[in-house]
Length: 119
Length: 114
Image (cartoon, each protein chain N blue to C red):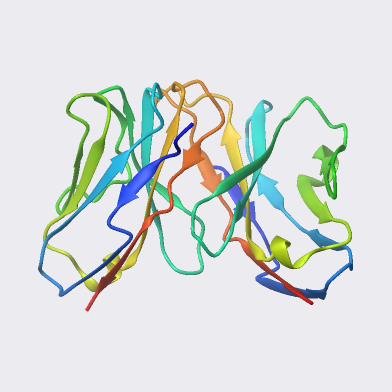
């Protein structure tokens, strides 16, 4: 069974500080996909990134960067120079390549990390 | 492009009452998902539709929960009768098709059962 662990329940940082959100996953599949979603106070989940298990290159998008390490089963997310608008709950999620039994991609979410950026 | 729409945004009911939530996915999206998000946890998939057929409902408590997507567009999730532990946010999401990785989420319906 697949599992996602986000050990940090809540993090507070002062604006302009860098912050890293940790994500550790478990899966028996060799092909899988990892995701990060942002859930602002408005409630809807916003897709941030998808990474497949064969691509271990780190990715940078503006102030966001992701570090994928298969050796430690981790997919960490760093926000550089944090801003108040980054305050939200961030979810890491895992999807195994194809669930033939269900005929679908099953997204398993972690419990989320609540990030508060203090001005 | 309009996003996923859900209504109502908030609902308070007493236990043993019934409640229904509505979702309208992004136009052209064949796959629709209902998730339950209990406070402090990540979303958990309840049911997945492909057009108007059910792909996966293995985690739907079928004794009290039901869902339909009759014309393959909008969908309704019903709880009857509600229990205290059903208090949660119910999220609807859609994707282009069942092999698409990216799911687009609506704002959710926050249900409080007293």
